[in-house]
Image (tube, rainbow, N blue to C red; front, side, top):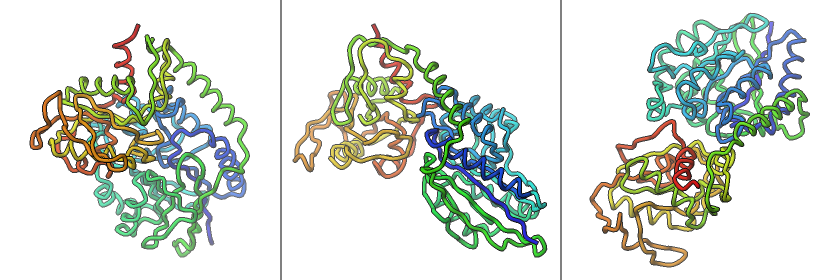
Length: 463
């Protein structure tokens, strides 16, 4: 005999609820269809459902996301880095208290005592036909951030080495809920033949039909709810083997909304607006801002960042402010809308030589206009770099500008001297400014985000 199992999943919604009613409409209909036919259909979320750059997640600290997952009838989830490191310790500890679905995350633990009651490394569950399916969850390791908040995060591969054997011996089919990214998923599939299916997220790849590595099916469905995923598994109950497994990504554009879900999202949006439209600060003058020019708003933020972190100097990209601020009352919604990024302050000790390299890289037109995606940035382009306590003249050409006569606090830059430099954590990752990634001694500040510092900077000039 054969048993058919269907798994629908979402990943990296990032609180883009515009498509959520369409997704839920399909999921509810699909689950009802298979359940009525005596088959199993499970709904999974692979993390980063929460994103505090969006008002509903910001106002309710992710609790509304969990309610919407409950209402949609989800069965399992793992957490992403947006749940894990953009919420403070207590908010994450209690995020899933009311969840009506099971959460699997095997590589995260509290530093302060018992793990939250909802946190389990894995689950073994039976389908309608009695097939045992093991679900294990893993989330992307950012130890510098998790440790600051109060969590220990383990290396996913080491966790799998410890956990996968016992899980495999306890079930017929093993499914990994992976918020690690496609490249890590491929490596895991190659190294762990015990895993049958990896349902992934984090790096926002879209695999229309999945891919196979070492007989493991890997699938992931993009970002922001423009697609969601479906996995089909056929299990031979007599031979105890999988005889077919396949995946596809389903576009949502032409799907019908679920009316109840659309109403729930509208109510949450209205209530979030009420919560965030409270006055936060009163500005005596308007503060214009553009990504491509210096502005007083950016000067205030960059200077406050330097003073708050007790750094020698600071730099920030003007693209972090998405609009100008009017004179008068500015609400929390205004602050959030204009600086929505889940970006934390950081300090890095840099030599004068490294600073000169950074300044020259940031002067280049291709850098200023680069449409940055990820690393917490929710804007359109990086924009012009703005500095506090660092100045220079510009030589060269418009196409190839060069910084000369660099000065820190009015004194000539010394190439071998170390300067404690404050910046957005964005620049400590990836290859935007390669010399920063390699530097030791980085320090991150949490749970404060750039917008928290922006508000405090504005309060200093408040009427």
